[in-house]
Image (cartoon, rainbow, N blue to C red; front, top):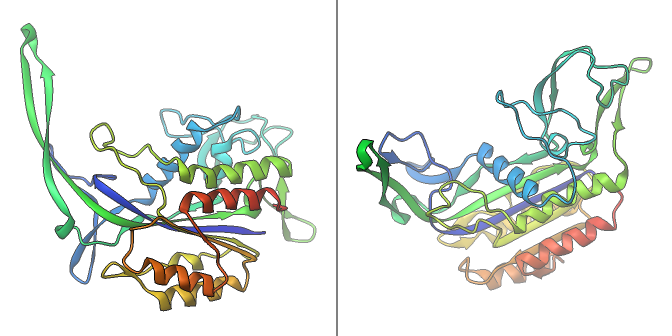
Length: 315
C-alpha cells in the first residue's frame, strides 16, 4: 500500500467557513468563478488547519508541537505527529539532535514535504442563489463604563462542497535519503510500523470529527463527509479526486464509472458511503457503485470500515 485517497461531499447549513479579505465592517466568503458564475470555496490552507486541530483534539498521549511566534515547528519527525504528517519549513539550531543527525544538525533551514495532501473545498452550488448577507454586532466597553456597538455585515450561505485528501503512505514516519555510493534514493524510517499505521489512521479517523472552522461561535456547522469514496492504492495517485461532478443536483454517473474503473486497476479496496437526501440521483449512484463492486454504506460506517481495513494492512 503506497497511498490512500479520499474524496467526499459535505452539505452545509448557513455558514462562512473561510472568510476572504473583505473590509473593516464586511466579512465576505472566498469565491472562485466558473463560466462567469461565482461559487464559494475553502482554501487548502484552511482545510489543513481544520485537520491539524481535529488531530490535536484527538491525541492519545502522542506529542504534537505548537508553532512558535515565527510559525516554525519542532521538525522532529520521530516524536511529533504534526511535523511528520503535515511537513514543515523550520530553522534548526546547530548541534540539535534530531532523527537522521545523530551527531547534531549542522544548522540552517530544514524542509519536509507533507505526506498528507489536502485540496481546497470547492462549493458546487452557485453563491448568488444560495447565500445571504447577515449582520452581527460588536460591543466595546469605553471609558466611564460606556458601551459602543459596531454592526458588521457577514456573507453566509448553504452549499455542497467537494473536498479531498491524499496520504502518501510511504513517506509517513520517515524521509528519503540518498545513498551516495549508488546514487539511489531509499526511505529511512524513524518510527516502527505500528506507529506509522496509528498516525495514518488519525488522518482518516478525524474525518468524523472535523469541527474547528472559522466563525463557529455564531455559525454552528457540520463539515464532515455526507458522500465519500476511500481508495487504498498500490500506487500513489490523485485520480480519485475527479470522481464527483455535480449537474443540477445529480452526480455524473458516467464520470463516476470512468474514474472508479481507472482507480480499481491499482486499488484492491474502494469503500463508499452515502448519507440519504444529499443528491437527487442517490439510488442511481448506489446502483452504479454496486455494479462496480463497490459496497455502499453510510458515510460513518465507510470511515470505520476504512480504519478496520488499514489495521490489517502492512504500511
